[in-house]
Amino acid sequence: MTRATPDSVIAALDLTDPPQRHAADMIRHLAAKRSDQRGFYMICRKPTHQGSKTEPKARIAHFNTARDDARRLARSAGAPFVVLGVVDVVNPTDDLTGRLL
Image (cartoon, rainbow, N blue to C red; front, side, top):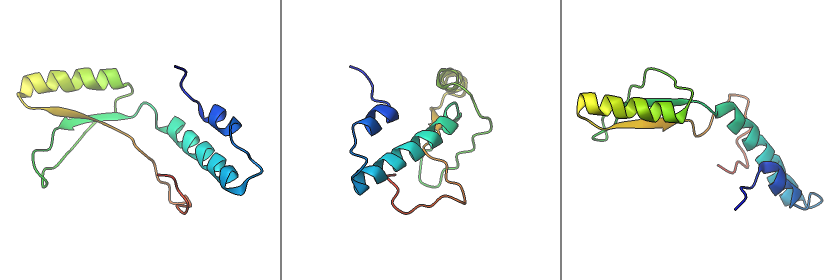
């Protein structure tokens, strides 16, 4: 199975139709943001209750490195750790109306 790319999805849209043109704009916007977010992971101890504090200290460039570091910390601390990744970056200048996410 081939994974769809933003360009392949946009190519399948009818850009003369305003809602589909808007969807294409949103896909381009999100794809650009996503490319800025790659490689940003952090680890911290798994929260145990609603008031738990998560205090990640360092950014890690690769997911596999973050997972290995989390495993190492979990073994040494005897407690579960989580790998955190960027879901979205919101800039002060972003227009949040009509967002897909």
